[in-house]
Length: 122
Image (cartoon, rainbow, N blue to C red; front, side):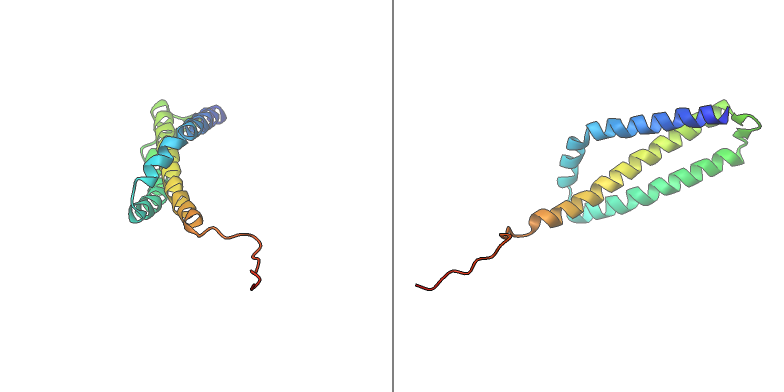
């Protein structure tokens, strides 16, 4: 039973990640509307908060008796699905903020030719 529950949660999380990917252009536009400092903070907090939500959420499910002999209890199954979805969302948000910082560095550089030719003096 636990494999069915885990598989259903996995499909939900992957599906949510793909849905977020479809809206990546609007997410990218929102990120570029923020200051560099805000994106740095959002990226760091998003990645670390996602990890904290996941760890604390799963710990709470175990502490409140959500794991039975045959798998997760129904309330725990929904809790794990929700905690995992929040984790995916925060990870995508944090990663998008960090990637936008890197892309700024790449696009901010001056355009230089790949081959530098010296001009002859007339």
